Length: 86
Image (tube, rainbow, N blue to C red; front, side):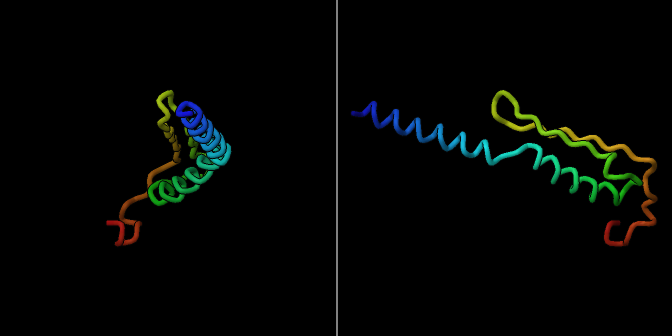
């Protein structure tokens, strides 16, 4: 009887994990991060959204690694930024 309850709990946990994995999409996270990183970095450099690349990797231990690379033509002169940034 105790084992049946433990097995049932394990089955429920597994179902919850599988459901949440279906709802999580690294591609969606990458798209949002790319947009946010472009908005941030374009304050400091001249670039296009295509110059920002984001990749989300799930590690063996279940943690996530964010790989971000941005390429720009030039950095903006800090004197040209609004006073709020300085």
